[in-house]
Image (cartoon, rainbow, N blue to C red; front, side):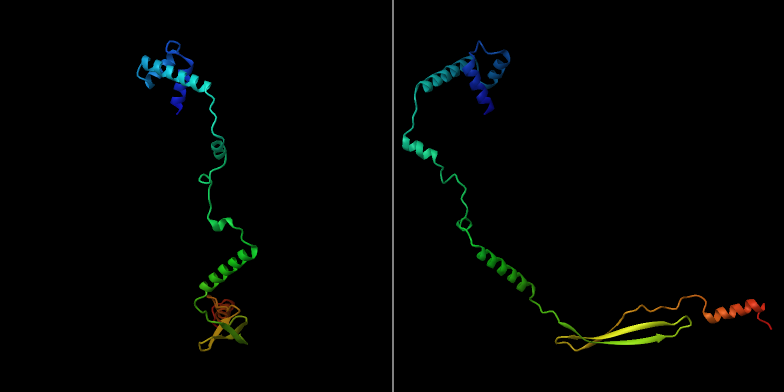
Length: 184
């Protein structure tokens, strides 16, 4: 399009002799020779002269129809999207969708767990170290359609005797060091 507009501008402004050298070289890439350019120029000038003297007025009915937007050029949306929907209809649709999603997500029954009672027992564990108290809580878990199972859960960590020297060995070592060999 750009080349046609440039050629049309040169045809209306310049004859072959008046064309600048750069434009003449460009015109020769678009048309065959000087005679073709001259004939195109004459045709262009006659068209301009003819249409500038003729007063073209369309029929009023045609002009009115052209001014109105055509329904084929407007973007049409589906009929359901153009009609307004009341708020309660939208709310009911959303609630129905939420209920359907919840219902589809809960197709398998999960076992129900109930804690029947707590039983607390306090034990004292005697070690060769200072004594620790361990609290063990037991609770009974009841599953629906399953036999009851007793489970033990320690609530306080139990201490493991450390590796190293026990108190008895330590006393023996102290006696050995104090007595100078343990012979008396």
